[in-house]
Image (tube, rainbow, N blue to C red; front, side, top):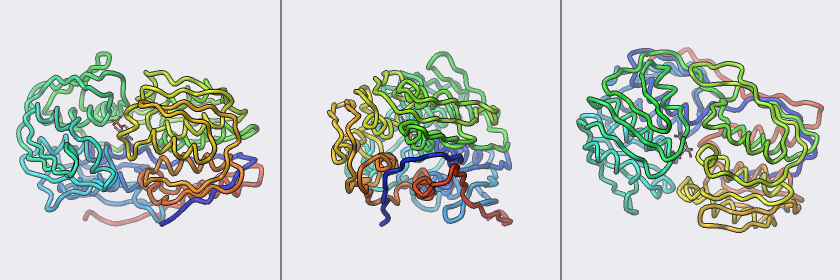
Length: 455
Ligand code: S3P
């Protein structure tokens, strides 16, 4: 089992790009697999989560060809041959690994197929709530058995069949739930409508539009008409702003630093991390350079000058839900108090992220109060190195690697293989940042170019 050994840095001057967006890579594998023909997906995220979704589509009959790979991890350029909406029964249960997105999106898709499928995952995924997709899909007529030790949890046995369109008011703001229903709705006759309690990331709607599938949006209500077939096309996945977030915090908290993250997704339903860091005093410019394939892409530049505390607004929470662990680290490094409330959803992520963040911050000497729906952090006290657990949660491992860059003494984070679920190559970037002594560092991962054929 691997670990990170992290020491304080006094200097950060770097430019690089982060791997492809996780949310978009899942969706690209699914939507290209349903499409009318051949699609080249570029900058696909070769993380365990996204590879599981790609393999799931493979077991449902979708052929794909790997064109390029990130050395040691997996495919970054894939040619996917869409099946024109006609999937075939998987010969065995599908492993979704650690991924809530993979399981929930696939469940929506599979509920509408004329065959049964079993979806399972690791211990963390098997304890996450699946009732939130079972309920609406059952209202559409699906028959989904949750076979987990915990009620309403995976494994899920999905008895697919013909579904009816519904109008569904979601009790929680979740892009995964919205997307599961929209994907199921694509197979229904008539219009399926989802009403969100707050805006959530809109990658499914944007990607469907890029593949010429129309959805209608009125405020937080999204409608899809069934029977549309995604038109095959190529898709370029931008860098993942949630992965960039770790480095944005490191640079923002370090006086005199300069960081440029290139070619990252700047979708407005994902960029509240920038707004919050700016409110905390960071000097950040983000420039949208292109609107490739319906998603804004650009560069983010940070000049570090220290941070002050802030209050996270309720409406910001869905936009930065994955960034809250590293925002909590930023808060511990900031002068003053930061309040994070209305974030109860953190308790049902890969770990209970309120508890895992609070426990680790306390072990580093930070002043934190835990609430049922968040935490309050009074920063400014020097953090000290500690031996920390990742609890098998990728974002906890990475957030506390950033904390270690500011702590007195060594910080060891145990059990860090989990970072491969979202950020393959994180530890190489971390090493490069810690070794960086020159005026400027620029680094990229190596890629391997393949010339293989359909398999
Ligand atoms: C995701 C949505 C979010 C996020 C997750 C990815 C997606 O979850 O936390 O990492 O790709 O749709 P919820 O939909 O549960 O809010």
